[in-house]
Length: 223
Image (cartoon, rainbow, N blue to C red):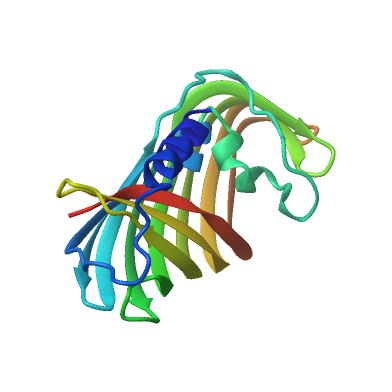
């Protein structure tokens, strides 16, 4: 519920202070994606604003909260593969680095097109765990896993900048778009089963591309 509280706070503060026409250009934007807090992913982005363009970077970290036991499946169908459920898999640690650039379609810095490239690394080491899904297969044993994800997003959005008496100006972004990701993984299983076969050691390695739809919100401050 944290993200809903933050969004509500921003909307309440801004109901009487939304700029109608003239928007003062800010130099820096400090933003976060609060909806990702739900999956224990904590992120922060900084952007430098150059009139109608921005250039920025984002960092994120997702600590593991489970050290053994079941990796549960919560996604089914096309994206139901085990390697596509990392945010739901509490066994995983995750680190993200991204570069982004916006181009505002108007001089008032409201509507924008944004390109994002990112790298995300997922991993856990020597955890006694298991997974069982009709669609995505099964495993059990001591596992060490790593996944590398390279991605590109093309987003379309709307920025809301609010007037305050302080140097920090609240900002609220809504966006949607498309993306594509290249993923590679290595899964090592020791003294356990993969599918219905027992192994003292087994390694799975694979690479693939996957498209995605994007949508969300960002909140933060401008300087």
